[in-house]
Length: 164
Image 1: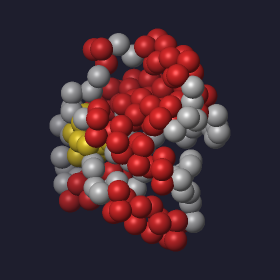
Image 2 (image 1 turned 180 degrees about the vertical axis):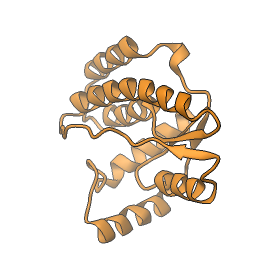
Image 3 (image 1 turned 90 degrees about the vertical axis):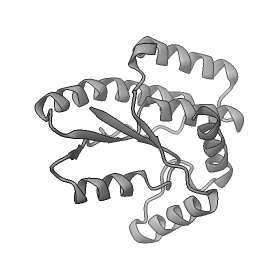
């Protein structure tokens, strides 16, 4: 069985997954996401992520087969690309026509039967999420794509709340 964790940057998905696996190593395991090439264009970024999630779904299935007694906890699924891309449309970073092209790419890889059955939506307040992000910046010096734009974070959060 697979359980996906979805939510905005800084919502605590990775931390929650790590704590569960750390406390129950005989019951749970994780899957490492493939690195994606850096891409500034919203449409291309979204399409790359859809392709990554498609490939990873096969890798996750294989990992499940090798570990039938453990639950696989995964940080994000293709839902996240749909939600983040919708936020790009809301902010004018992606035109509606581009989003339609993005959805065509999505539908070429995924059908309705491909939706995961087990999703945990991690949804802390926007203030808490911003605090987590700033803390990560201080500790790791890493910023994710456009995450310093808190209007983007708010748009993503709103899309998650509408979706779930």
